[in-house]
Length: 97
Ligand SMILES: [Zn+2]
Image 1 (cartoon, rainbow, N blue to C red):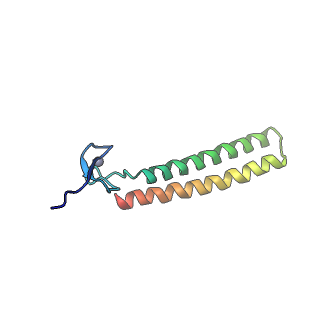
Image 2: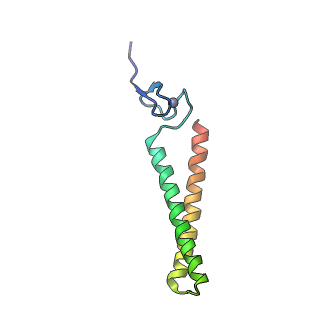
Image 3: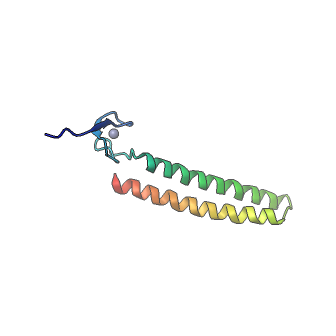
């Protein structure tokens, strides 16, 4: 008989298979790579919002230079990219769970 490797779920503390990505007891995603991807996606979106807000603020301060335009465009792209990544990761989480 082959004994299966187990680990403790960090969320509900039940014993689960060592290779498990989703806990069968609490149904939550415990994949480290997944968690990292999600944090990266949120970080991208946040950075985008900061750049975008700074750009908008500068327009109200009557600053309309190249840097302001670049910040707005870059911020907008980052928001879209980050948002898509958050959505994709959320769908993946529900799909597996
Ligand atoms: Zn669990």
